[in-house]
Amino acid sequence: MFKQNEGKLDRIIRLIIGVVSLYLGLFVLSGAIKIIVLIIGTAMLITGSIGFCGLYTLLGINTCPVDLKTVVKSKNK
Image (cartoon, rainbow, N blue to C red; front, side):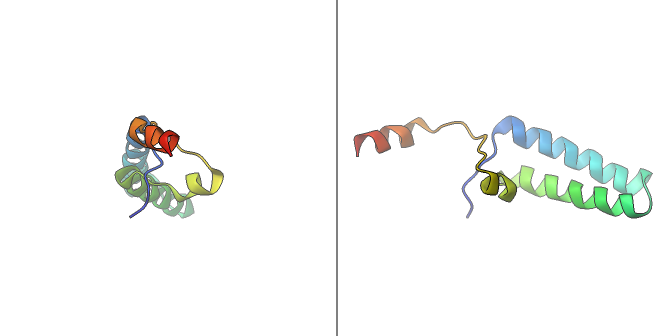
């Protein structure tokens, strides 16, 4: 589907932020800030789960480790 652009640590951090944000949004906060935190939490959980961040693509960021097989193949061409 999408090429992963998040490394393992990045994904773990996103999942933790997502869970904490959803907890805060559901049980602690109220009003407009609740909605904002719930949206952020949901986005963090989704991007952390699938390993792809559209914003990273727009900014040219990639925290995935380099795949050595791909590097070797591209050098041999």
